[in-house]
Image 1 (cartoon, protein in one colour):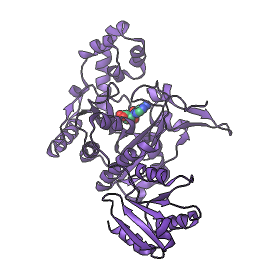
Image 2 (cartoon, helix red, strand yellow):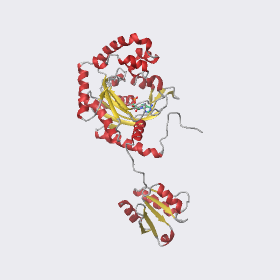
Image 3 (cartoon, rainbow, N blue to C red):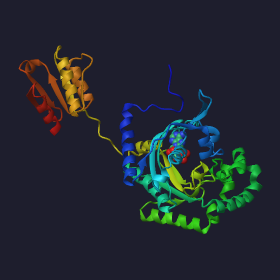
Length: 420
Ligand code: AMP
């Protein structure tokens, strides 16, 4: 038997309502902040991600689904959306149409990671990007929007972590200091961290190795080396969060080790989902648009993982959806009336009702069971003694009330169903 590829999952009909509920909240919150949806292709030229995410990152160096297509071009399934959104922004000169573009997206992403709870190879993210302004209010806005989305899902167990990476100049100074601090410990670091010493020194803070963490616990912190402008930017973000009732903590080790990241980084973690606890992450990237060939344009954004969010919701039982109901189930009592029943169903559907009926020549009892399984609000009986008197019977399943209608009066039946 052929099974779904490792790390990918089917979303079965029973799970769709919660996905749609999540998406409806995402869309509602983004729309209130006047963000507009953008959809970019699932795959892009490989070089976009190599440049847009960075060769030294785990994503690009180890996790991309890259293949050579039939024309011999190297393409990659998108591992995240920012690079694609920025490419589209540059390609369509969106900055010429308006100075500030506030965009949001939702869709599948692909990374060849080791599958585990909360980590998949095809997973779904939603997120936002604001391109064209360096205003710290927008950094705060990303955090406020994600927090509001989680709030509306009923999630409680959340921690907002923020940090500032400042501007590249102060970061370069800091890296020199960090290098001086790490160098004497180099022999004791894990091989991964040793590599990072050369490629991406700040990411040694991300190491999960206990010994690395011990060494880094006493390392100098970037925040102590920030210039005045960066400190002011960070202060404004914090003030904005406070005045908009977002609890947060400053996590000075929250680094994104790429040169085009500037100022704010943030992450929201949940205490309800085990070790893969980050529900979303983001930050400011004032140098990325230029890096990808556009004109210098400040940007800020975040991405959130939908599987993890839904897992947190499930573990916290944070929301309960009503059982899905259909409006009418048509029970056909006698052979020979299937055509009438079918036409009636199509007719009601075209008027806007959710209607189903039997396709398996089942007994009346089995049809009633089916009606109950679908939580039908009404059952319409076609056949029997009533039908020979040109009547059909409508049963309200909530209170078991029955009403007879002339079989020619489908409009009246429709009206009485619609009214309830
Ligand atoms: P990132 O783009 O790595 O900053 O990730 C943003 C968010 O996407 C994370 O906080 C997770 O919630 C989610 N995410 C990232 N990678 C995966 C994955 N492999 N499986 C499921 N969710 C993921």
